[in-house]
Length: 323
Ligand code: PBG
Image (tube, rainbow, N blue to C red; front, side):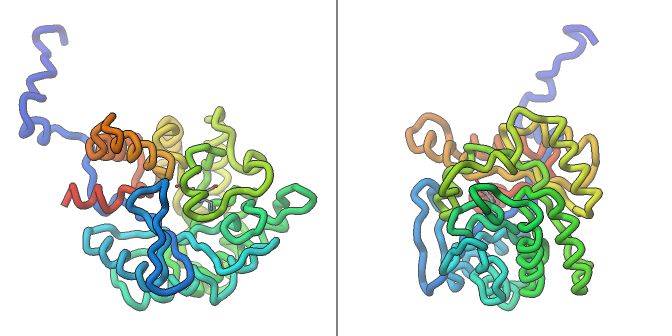
């Protein structure tokens, strides 16, 4: 095909042509909305680094979930800010914990939306690490026990999908085992398999009050320089029984997303994380980019790279634009 025989611009002439040959489409049901829940009633505490997002008490959370559902969003992922934190993160698996109560209320009051829960200890531990700590080290196998109890408590409260994000080795197998032993064979695991030690989580840690009080997460989350290792992590989690895999963050890791999808051809979720959201919001506020257009371009790029599902703080805004 040689110029001028092939003129790609012929098919870009106007929006009708472009629409006709468009390869990737976004729909509201591609999105999962992350939500932050805290104790209290009528509480709507704004998160300054994430405009439009709030820590909500359960009553207001319900309204938010209903609104998301009415826009065609089919999933929410919950993060809890507990009443109290301790060394072990024991609120994480309390049957009366903030997340467990929130799940029960959503399941009782809202139809047709899937509740995904983040299985991790960082929001519940006083030190802010994702696992049990001893002498400044995050212990792997001791943490598995706590994570399993947490996942089970979520399933008992009515969660539809559990999503371990702690990055301990062997946690998918441990969670699958305890769920199966308790007749939750049908609850799928969405594993944050390729989760990088990323500075893009900054705004989230303010939102979820989960910043590590010492050190960093580099001994459990992945090194941003590694790609092959992501494939090994995914392979391992699939072997252990993961039903879906997550790549996180999304935009700086589209190569990983693409490779995971191409290699394993399984349902893949991408987490368009807080920093990715806040950067666009900030630049847009300064008038440096068109926030709406950059949002839609980012989301289509994530889907084009291979995401079947996008966890994004833009879920409602994007769904509104599509609807
Ligand atoms: C861990 C968890 C984190 C995020 C989701 N689950 C933070 C972390 O690993 O420090 C980050 C999400 C985001 O930045 O939007 N519970």
